[in-house]
Length: 250
Image 1 (cartoon, rainbow, N blue to C red):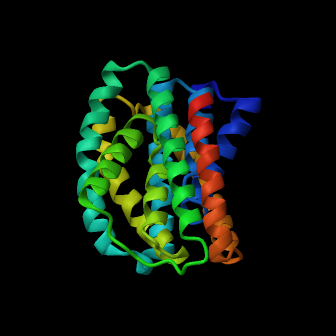
Image 2 (image 1 turned 90 degrees about the vertical axis):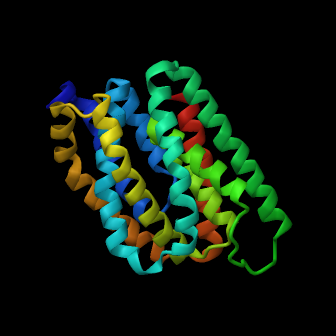
């Protein structure tokens, strides 16, 4: 078994792989919890590469499931903003202390959650309307997501809050997020490989965990059909808070 994962450690990484698949087809943001589990059970940098490869597997499932529901106007604004964040995140990975980085990412997510709750309270009772954020907000979100995903695979909560505040419904959220993460994670691969985050042992581990990702994704597709829009938004927010706490305490 790669990285000598046995017993409880093996159970935990399989569970984390299930979460990865589930988060991509149902409740976005929960993938950060999986990233936290991997970081505890594996060397920190190698865990980042392993989670990235699992996320890409789940991204493909999500795109196949919700490819027709994406809002490409939102994506055209948000995707270019991610690239500077990926470059900055690559540099940060090589110079900053892991504990300091996790602290700032976790705090950033919690601040964004607080802002989203304020927006939701002010708009209570109103029908959601789709809107394009100011370019400053979009580039700040994309940059922060790029840094967070490159350093800790923690972009989910940041992008989730951006899409919810843009007024997307459940289907559009899933479709837009699916394409955004799939494209973004594929862009990350050469950056991650270039700094040694994907050794052969990591590749073997992700292949072994692929069935768990697929099962998690299939469960997510079933669950999301049973959640209405109001509860979908609530669960997304709760999942984002949990993810933020996971980043802070891992």
